Length: 129
Image 1 (spheres, one colour):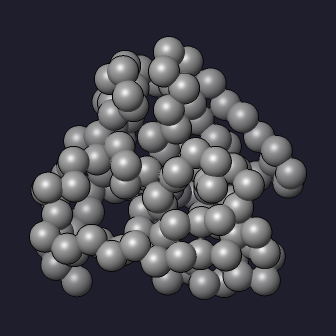
Image 2 (tube, one colour):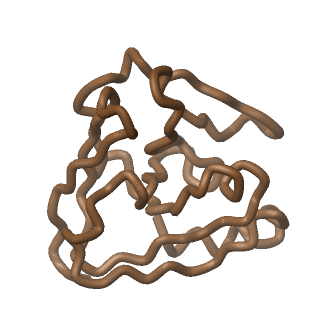
């Protein structure tokens, strides 16, 4: 694994800003579950200590559904979900690759994940955390 570097990210309007430590070569997951497919979220699962909210935490609103384990966080101003607490890793974060500058990475791989059948495939997410 290559060394990690801090990358800044933000929602569309820039009110919610964050930083995440990631290597130069990353693999994101493209989930086909009901919410990810509609929002275009590309998952980068990270431990809690590799993520920090830098601004706009008070401008986030939460949405929970189904098992209510995941905490989907959206900017109240622009509606973008830049990150959230995932069901698969409730002690960490899932960061949306689309809210980061892709030019900062040397290699990006995007792999499909069958979230429509989440229970049957959740063990596959363990390697991402």
